[in-house]
Image (cartoon, rainbow, N blue to C red):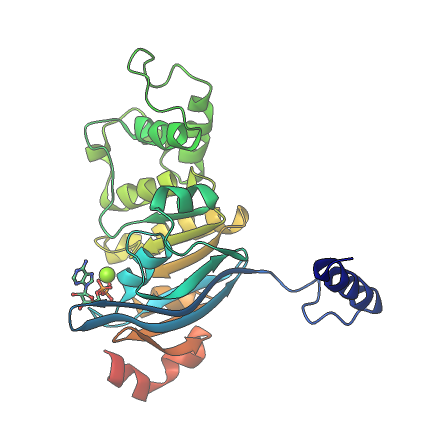
Length: 271
Ligand SMILES: Nc1ncnc2c1ncn2[C@@H]1O[C@H](COP(=O)(O)OP(=O)(O)O)[C@@H](O)[C@H]1O
Ligand SMILES: [Mg+2]
């Protein structure tokens, strides 16, 4: 018997005694970064980031401009490569994999500025995301919409509360609706982990909580783990179960929002 079997059986034995270090009731680690480091010239945008996120968490990321929030998302999704450190997703090392492979494994993202096809209708945008997921590509001889995917596209728009806009051009959507559509496109890829860069930026104060209620409701009921960058502390308090404070590429605080944000000294150091 090789080592692996010996270890496996030892695990089984522990499990049967009910003394395994990670009890079955505990959520698995979905994402782990170890000493993740990225510099741009003299700027250290990610400075040895150690982070563990378990399935089902809603993690908010705050920090001043230039703290490295977007860099962290870019590193996790493969848009930029770290100079040092590793990234593991569901136990698998994904460091250095290209973005499309990472997306296929189950990590999707939305950008600070919605990445939409503005010349197309709302439902056509979702159909493109669904075609990408199905690896069908776009067949120029088969018009978008004459396809079984259309009912799924409409269902997704319904979940995000923008189904009424399905046949309208993207520009007909209000800003909040555009943000929701952008996240709906990422959601259409059926991720297990969704990263969002300022999902409410550009949305009016009046609409902000409506947008967050909708999108966090959809993500939670689908069991999608989320990491989102957000400037509004009230949004963090309401929607994050955990908040990371970044400063100069480092995590300087990590914990429940009430505890972390109540620290006034911290606020002064960061903002
Ligand atoms: N592609 C890049 N090229 C050069 N510098 C970059 C690049 N991306 C980020 N930076 C720098 O890294 C630092 C962190 O940037 P960023 O992650 O965008 O911060 P945040 O999203 O917190 O505002 C900044 O100083 C920024 O100028
Ligand atoms: Mg940013």
